[in-house]
Length: 376
Ligand SMILES: Cc1cc2nc3c(=O)[nH]c(=O)nc-3n(C[C@H](O)[C@H](O)[C@H](O)COP(=O)(O)O)c2cc1C
Image (cartoon, rainbow, N blue to C red; front, side, top):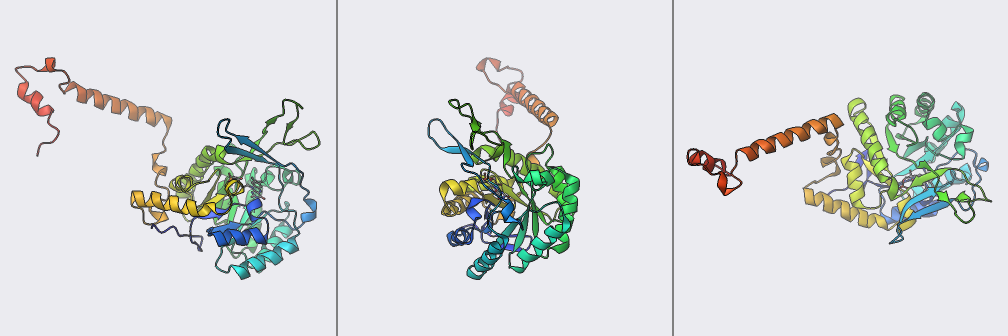
């Protein structure tokens, strides 16, 4: 079996599968379950110093299903960050690390646009023993009204400043989680890495309106008759996530070759993960997939990724990391390549006998030679 282990920013993961921040990492019980099932790392639900400012609503999810199979392929949420108190989380981080000292536990954190809270949250989580941070610059709803989450992630200048504060205090690896709700994801990505972050994670959810109930005429998910645009995830977002990961990976290769990249968006199988890794991700995160399939899915994902690697003779993840990146080019280059291929094919056809009527007495030997496939 292929070696699935990865070392990223000095963290040693048994496999590249990471629980993405959200309900699957929402308390110590479920995080311990994730480690028991064999996940490579767990990113806890995003926390802030002041949980009392967080009030969730219900319903807060809406799903898109295939008409025939009823399979869920799109998922919208209007969920906020964790509503559990910071002290509770600190206590749970310690308990999780006591129970799973080898498990890679990553704290996802978010704060307001002020230096002191960022320093405080980093220092206190670090003291509790977490292994790394993911800075949530990407939550699309609720918190941007307090200039948190996506409000920062959409503004490369603010991002530089906030990442700088985080890096002043951090003594462990820091990833910045990017919002996809921007025109050029490389702009905030570059800001975060230039400010010293060790890596990037992408993507968070895509701003969306799931639909309108045609009986009530109310948009969904409907809370007391109203809604807000939410965040879209699950299989349906994978092509967009792959594109953004490809763009970030290309930028990283050219400008920050030591930085890491965690791919997120619609991953549910080992083959999905292989595609993210081929496009430059070092690890892959799964959030909605766990909500649909449960923690045990990681075993099947490892088996499928391993089978893919065996099929191609890849002994380690490094052997195929970024291997598909060189095959992106410009559209003009595609046109040129196609014209050249057509011209070559035409030339080949011109010299070859395709119909018996084409044989000629004078060039008979030459024509015969052209039909020989090898000349050994
Ligand atoms: C219900 C729900 C809650 C989420 N909460 C968070 C969160 O607290 N912090 C965060 O960084 N991302 C959060 N996310 C985003 C996911 O971590 C992930 O970036 C996104 O859903 C795309 O990946 P997926 O298709 O595997 O879910 C949440 C996603 C869902 C579906």
